[in-house]
Length: 115
Image 1 (cartoon, rainbow, N blue to C red):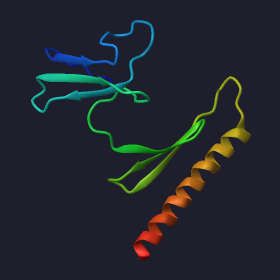
Image 2: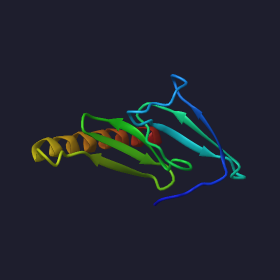
Image 3: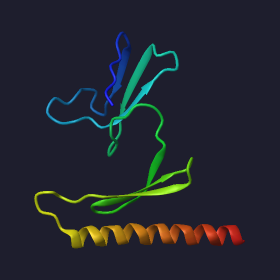
Image 4: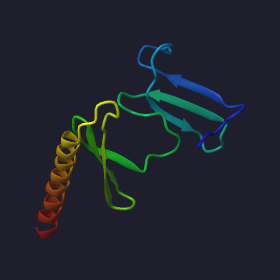
């Protein structure tokens, strides 16, 4: 999806009070309800996105992550595999690590519900 926003005042907040010119800037982009003002806040490990986040990261492995979507009550597993030197064994281990995390989280919930 590509969006063009015109005639909007943008406020950018970065940690060094200067925009980097050679590396990407990661953070959150916020737009006011009246679409008159926008702001961008730098945050480590974030991607640039528009609107409210539907899921949040609850686990981070070396090449994998688990996100949780509270609206739909579901976990999302993301595993990264390098295309130039794929290691399917490592990807399987990463996936197993994520599944073990989800299993522990579900067991914790079951114990809390049973109390």
